Image (cartoon, rainbow, N blue to C red; front, side):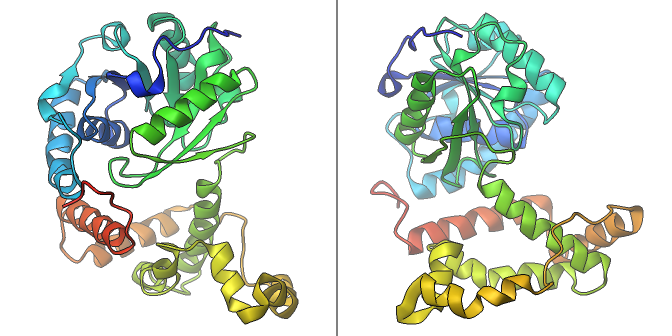
Amino acid sequence: MSTTPSPVAPEDVRRVACIGAGVIGGGWVAHFLARGYDVTAWDPADDAEEKLRRLVDAAWPALEQIGLADGASKDRLTVAPTLAEAVADADFVQESAPEKLDLKRSLLAELTAATRPGVVVASSTSGYPMTDMHSEAADNGRLVVGHPFNPPYLIPLVEVVGGDKTDRAAVEWASRFYDIAGKSVITMDRELPGFIANRLQEALWREALHMVANGEATVKDIDDSITEGPGLRWAFMGPMLTFALAGGEGGMAHMLDHFGPSLKSPWTRLEAPELDRALRDAVVEGCDEAADGRTYADLVAERDQGVIDVLRATGRLGKDAT
């Protein structure tokens, strides 16, 4: 385990390397560019650069709305021909490869070998603990999870946690860097498969699939039940405080005493349903119906504007937002 400190302080980071340039990796690229960093990206796909620049172009209007940092420019993006060239001068590395454990293990080992000593490398994994991913890396003390939410250039949250070989200093460094880079950071004290937010999303997702599989609700019914109901509250107050308010002046204590017995009611089925062809097709067809002719680009623009509107309405855009 390495105890080498990062070669730069979090506030002195100038160049970020983004390894993997798909939806999440490309979203990270857009975010870091908008925050005024130089960004070097690498992805093994033949058409990666074309797709990445198209993604950044699509994200830029939303980023201009919420406010660009001084010096922010799409021209500060470089796409490197090799992984080694992408990370050679990086002060921080964000890995966003596909969610395949063997790939993550070999890639993180390659990244620690190719970067300067001490440079913190963060993985965007949505579920794997770092302890499961760092086994092939010789210098694994500087490997952390930095789990974002899609799109990373708009959704503030990033969950930061190390593995059993990660130096605590690397976790603290990463958390401080993300904070400076404009993210809302949860620094976890321990590893948890799926982290925090994905565990909560997964419970909702499984119940939604059960309702579709059993013909109890359509895809549109499920989405409307959140956007027109509890989702409006969750935009500014989480489920725990929301439930506490359900207890009136007695707060959570009254809520639990009054509604606690209902926890034994068989309302939810947290075991995942069998994702057979019929359920898959029902979900896909339901999403097509809910899209109602809107293209992927249309839906991305609608989502981005919706996030901006919520952030603006709840006072979380920051002083630079227009």
